[in-house]
Length: 197
Image (cartoon, rainbow, N blue to C red; front, side, top):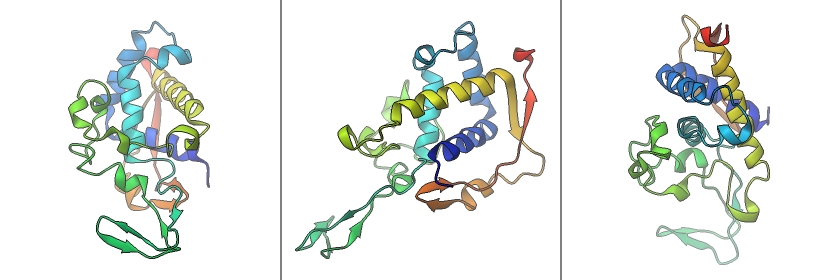
């Protein structure tokens, strides 16, 4: 259960079910591509990519990330002394929900990534794949390509919704951080789309 792709796809499906209006907008965006579902075309779709970034912001596949050990002599962070040899961690799950980094941080707003940039107060707080540069996840580009393709294929073929009686609060309520995110159960229905008929 340490696969980041698993957490990412469970989260995408949960957010598609939770916010069907976003699924409809992405479907329209995909239709405008005249069935062109190649990786380069999908990378240019603002709503699809805003949706994916918002999913990754609210549920980064690696929730906590790597920590660092404080060197000898200790360290002062925000006025607090951290003793030497203490492990310090900055959890992405928390940082990516900070009101100092994102306006209305608990809200699911895909537009914040392309048309409402004023909602991004500190874009550097968005690090679902870890650091930048040579410490960034080597699979980041593949992960984005993969999630775009799978999301497009799901929305092209299916209407997704929560199963009757499903309590959507279990998704975050039963979440575990086991290096990678382990969301709670998601029970949903995949119904053939008329677009696919």
